[in-house]
Image (tube, rainbow, N blue to C red; front, side):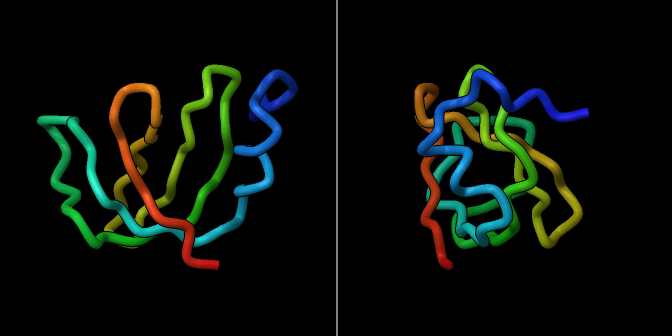
Length: 72
């Protein structure tokens, strides 16, 4: 079950949108700049969970320095 009731509305509007990773400071991910995926859900902390084409499910949060571009 996705908890989106308190999620920022501007981020909720992105669910289902395709994104391209610009930057993440996660030292453990194999994702790289340019990788693409689809936003699956947004939690109440503003973390945007992405199903990446590579199979990864890394969440992004702009407050922690992560950056992405919305493609559609």
